[in-house]
Length: 77
Image 1: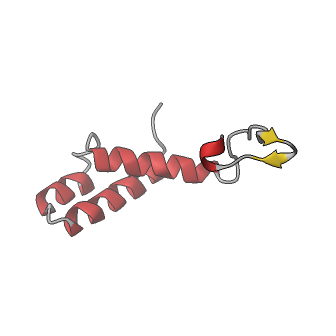
Image 2: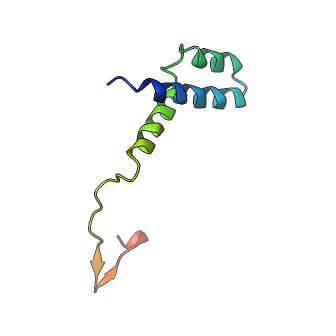
């Protein structure tokens, strides 16, 4: 699946900013030039944009586990 060009630009910008902040200026320039789309920073930013684009659509919730009518949490699950 080919990513949306706008999403790809946003992912590149976010990844380049992160790389530059970490002192990787050469890599940041590569990402902005479109030469670093295989960098993990770009792939992560693109994945996060996809998650945000899904918006309110969340995975179906599973029914709560109950014991004696009370919802279980933490280690009790």
